[in-house]
Image (cartoon, rainbow, N blue to C red):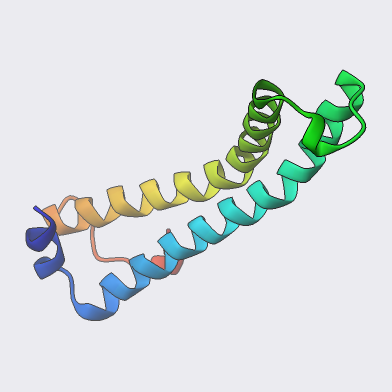
Length: 105
């Protein structure tokens, strides 16, 4: 399936999709790393711990899931745009929509 999809796209279009995916991954990871420290500090404050080493595994998991929530706030809008572009590309390829440029999406 991968090679079938890859062979239908020109090289320049597949590179564009890779750049978008890379941008999504970079934004998700940067927010995760930034928010995780703040979420750990919040859990430390709520639990009365002095240092990050004093946190239990469950408390670290709570901080991680809170950081994942903030990461989803950056990932969701860009993922919606990506899904819309993929749907429009499919409609163009089936002839249900006339050929439009990416900036017209």
